[in-house]
Length: 261
Image (cartoon, rainbow, N blue to C red; front, side):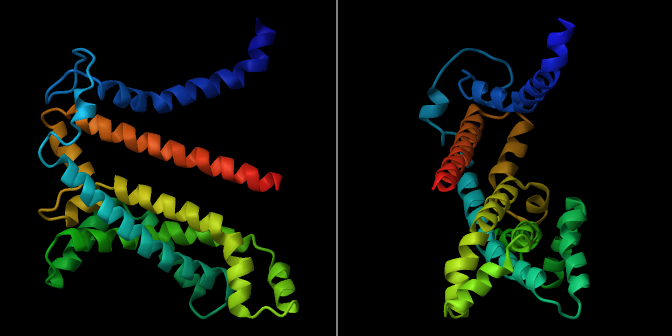
């Protein structure tokens, strides 16, 4: 028994750690089938009513739509701007490069409460009313840092000889970038975009400071938790988890096929 434990202890520990991490997700999936009205805290029986009527609570689907609007818009602009910054920092030496690197890390290191309050003060001083646009601007601002760090790591790992070989084969700068550089950096850009979307969709603190009367899905869940989260929120959370899991598996399959080729 001792010998078996010494050989499988790391596997047992890994299994327990994964179960511990996934336990809240299992809870969310299970209680999406709970026969409860508003206070979805105690198990009362199995039902699929919440799955058949996911938009039954007033405002839940509107809040979900706002989260998608903010997340997709912030991801689009943050990915473009962050990728350009990552190429500039990873490829070129210019005056103020080290200072720029430091400033990029500040939004990541700053507590979200401080960041949200500072952005709210800035919008108030500029005379901009809180709403969907201010939330999008705030999300773009803090997502850029994560995009820059992710893409910059990919840019730093590129072999410059590949681009030099393309130039030797009479490719101009645009063709070299489109046919050589961009395909090599694309996995890093995709990873940065997914990270940016997940951070934006999941954010509550910064959004709560700058959303005004606009309600996002995390804010809806927070407000509903004061009286009991409805099972429809668990349904939406389960669907989002399944979609994210499918995206990860699809990426793994595509990566393995490319590796075999």
